[in-house]
Image 1 (cartoon, rainbow, N blue to C red):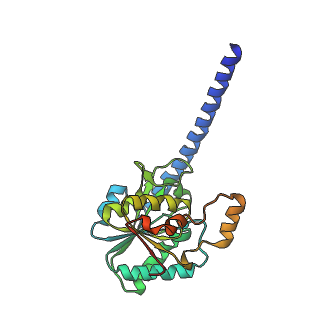
Image 2: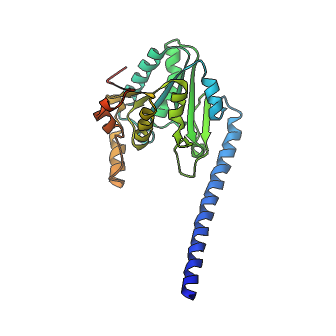
Image 3: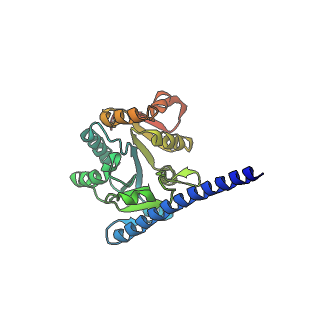
Length: 248
């Protein structure tokens, strides 16, 4: 009996300790986030919630850009060229929604304003949807940013069981354009197709992940998903809102 009570107490103490550590990490993360919000108040970036972003998106053609983040791309110049073609085709009064940081596809935050100037396009906006965890790294200059209150180390942007990256396209009759992508892109793309959102997959060398970075990931984790869109690309007939192209 005493042994059983002792085991129960040890389990309770271990659970309490784990909870305390998680609580401390969250408090530290939120402190960084609050400080970062103060910093953004002096910038041109407007911090908004999802409903406010929807209002800001009214009257714009919405294009969600998705792809690799930290893994990066083998040929960033080719990726920029494809994004330039996309911006040219989409034209005026467009809003491009990406993740909030600079890695990988996030380079579009820098490219799009410059491309718009090159093409003499006006009224081009950028927006980001990202976890609060991104505050520790900072976000790229953009017109609007939505911070999602996720758990510590959870970088998804899911609310109510749905990805907000998919929702912004669904709620505005916009589209999602994939330049490659891993496991997160796979789940978001499947969700988008299930919700009948227009999905464009650009299947060419511009969408290839950085080979060296991918090799390192696979060494440390043999189950790491480099090409999350492979199964979707191999079964295009399953989806009514999917378009696979070789180039814009």
